[in-house]
Structures are given as C-alpha cells and as structure tokens.
Image (cartoon, rainbow, N blue to C red; front, top):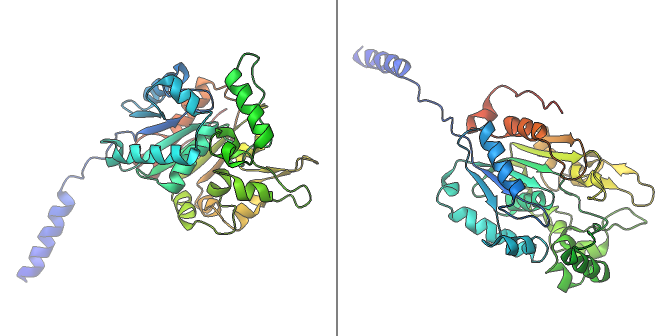
Length: 320
C-alpha cells in the first residue's frame, strides 16, 4: 500500500511541476556569398540586419575565406573548393558559439549554396536544420558567365576556363570550373570528362559509380532544403539547375529533378528528404540575385528562427 501511495504522490508532483520554458533563441544563421562578393559586403550586411529584424537576436555568421575582403573576393574566383570547404568545416567546428548550438540554419547565394550543401554532406558540425539557396546551380552550369567590360579578373578566369576546363590546373584553381558540368550529347548522361575530372560537383552530387553514403545520410537529415529559382535568370545557364533539373543542350528539354536517376535511385538522399516533406522548390521574381526585402523577409520568417519552430504547426506559405 505504501509503495502504491508513493507512486501516486510522485506522479502527482510530476504533473504539478512547471514545464521548463521553451527556448525562444533563434538558431544561428550561416551565410555564404556568391561569386565576386565578400563576406562583409554591403549586401551581406543588409541581409544580416534583415534576418535580425525578423528574428531578433539571431547570430548571423557570414562565411569568409580570408579576413581581408579583397582576398575573400579573390577566393570566390580562385582556389581549390575542396580545401576551401575543409577550411570552413574546421572553423565552424571550432567556433565557441556555433559549435555548441543545437543546430544552425544556412543561407546560400548563387555558388555559395553549392558550398553550403557540400558542408552539410562532408562535415555538418554544427548540424544544419534548414538550408535555403537563392540562384544556386545545384546541377552545375553548362556555360560560363559573360564578364563586364572592365572586369579583368572575370575575363582572365573565363578565358582559362574555356581553354582548359578539365585540366588539373584549372580544376584545382578556378572556382566556377569546379561546378561546370557537361553531358554526353548522345546519351544525355554526365560526360566521362566531367565524372573523371570534376573537383567538386561530380563528387557532392554523388554522380560517380561509388556512392558516398555519408553524403546521402547528411542531406536526408536536413529538415528543409529550399531552392529558390530566379524567374528571369540569365546568369546561371541553365537556370533550371537552380531546382536540380537537367536540360538537354540541343532540344532544351527539361528533366525535373524527380524524373532523374539522382532522385529516383536516391543517390543523394533527396528522395528521402522529399518523403518527409523536406524538399521545396520556390520561385523568386526577377533576374539573378535581384532580391527584394519582401521575398527575403518571408523566407526568413518561414525557415529561420528558434529550434522549436520546426515542430510547430505548419507556417504560412510564401506570398511572392
């Protein structure tokens, strides 16, 4: 009888005890800028301020490959992306605040989204909850961008890219070449040169014969992968790459992600992520990186914020 009373009393006390307050602290947000930008550029600073205006108190961490802004800009053009990503992995894992966070959110602009996805696949410590990308060529580019008349860094890089794309010299030194992708015109599949020599994209898209199960597991562990495609993008060719689609270079036939082997055979964990409603395809109006505060604030409200937000009722869809 005494043991029964003790159990009843313990249960009553447990029910009466106050529930620990939920942590309303927003998760930190990592930002990786695009080609030719810097970690402390005015645009990135404004993005950080906008995130804080939506979720006050957010620790915003713009990723830079060098503390000197000019060197960071140069590193967006020139460098070995495998080494660059490894550097960022080490820095984030050693960060006194980020490394102790239960998770982080991540925001990638253009090529920065590719590198953040590579971070998730290869390291993911601290772990990413939601990865949001704007104008990111997840399936690579089939053409190199046009350069401004006086942009000599761009012109020099593009000239070298077009001449020796698959050489080890270029693949280890010129960043855009490392997410350039070609296909076999007869089969429509990834070309042998790309599969053999690509320093980054063929690996992180798990397109080679031997699949990396860690990449697949880490992508599937995301809560959300949100891919924004710019409606009038002419910088990323093909722009459908921003949704992980394949485009036939001759017929211009578009093969959506879900019709491709990378999804059907789940090389990368995207199908598993989709099965838990974690894969989202969005449109942002305008040309490449023409971002409005309206679009950004709606995205930040929906996908960033406290950790508990992901377990609450569904958030309203973006009104673009």
